[in-house]
Amino acid sequence: MKVVIQRVSEASVSVEGNITGKIGRGLMILVGIEESDNESDIEYLTKKIVNLRIFDDSQGVMNISLLDTGGEILLVSQFTLHAQTKKGNRPSYIKAARPETAIPIYEKFKKSLTIASGIEVKSGIFGAEMKVSLVNEGPVTIIIDTKEEK
Image 1 (cartoon, rainbow, N blue to C red):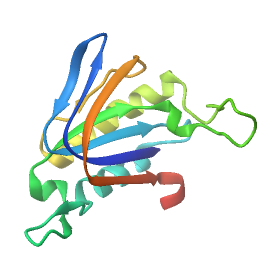
Image 2 (cartoon, one colour):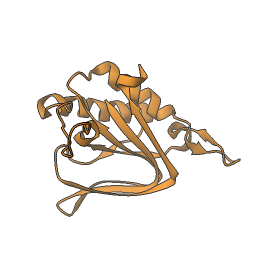
Image 3 (tube, rainbow, N blue to C red):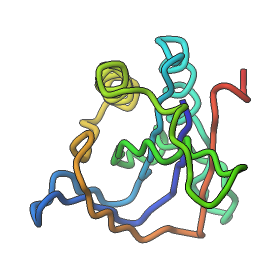
Image 4 (cartoon, rainbow, N blue to C red):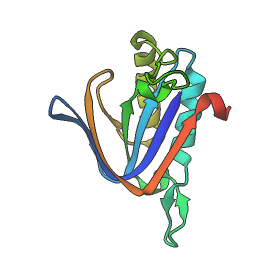
């Protein structure tokens, strides 16, 4: 699994003009899923994300986690995170999981983040054409690829 985590003051996602997920201060997470991803990838990312110390403490130092701030999470599926661009100018998405594999993993990841954070994770709609809006604080953007981290 590959995630792009952005610290935001607000973020939302809409499908066909309807907002499907909206948060205030917290984390906006884009997630790309590969065919080989499994429960261990979900567990690793969940623990890492909720404990990442990327929020400022009273001294202005990034030393506080999402759990410490009570922030929110917006989760958006994005298969294009697995784009391969080495050959030519048209990206290949062959590493991205097919929907029948990716959707159950996405849903388990969402549930895992909800349990670990103690708040309902907001989201887009898997596979839909979405419009994402956010205000990135900092900016702070972290990329984690479970295939590289383990």
